[in-house]
Length: 315
Image (tube, rainbow, N blue to C red; front, side, top):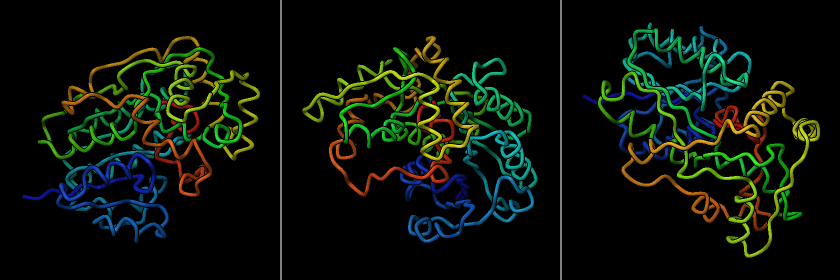
């Protein structure tokens, strides 16, 4: 019997990668979007498109009716637990069997960042829902580096406020591959698991700059800036104040060593090594090497599914 999979955050980076991974392997795909203008592209991927908003519980039932598996991704912000709860309640009412939820590395009630604490609250609600559930907690995305590509192209440097932090950063494509594997597996197989997903090795941003220099054949530098300067840059790029404050939470925690961890979970799930930073940088070299319209910096609304990963967060 074929199963129906509903993808939330369907137009963003992570869910787009997940749709690529599912491809023809998922018999019935649905996509939930806030803006119907993206419908044509999603239909071309074989998805049935529903317009709805996780902020508005009343808009969700049509998309959830007849769904077996839910990929739950909420935009990053102070209402994230409410949005997740709206989706979980809609899933319960519609008879959805399984939810695979995107959380964040280190999500816990005492996490040193507001995103981790909010994700912990949403994770707990899902775990108490009576549904089959799996929670994915990825580390800092390598794709965040694309937000620094313009500066790297122009000056050969990028600036962050994370000092000598070592992060077990992950390629979002590996997260998507793990999510697809779980969604295509037996519903009970991964029930009750909270998987922390990382890359193969912890890296400083000096090491990232050195690796990128090898790929580009020129020197690339990492420049440490203060939290206030970084906040001004984020706000100038259109980041909401709440996001800028949360990014500072993460930067302080990472600089203190909070992100210096890796796991073997990606390899255990996929039976292949997690992508290394060198793989990611080679694949995205044109973004850093030259001005290319196909690598334009997305607007903040287009980055919703990266959640706190945007310009420096681990989701």
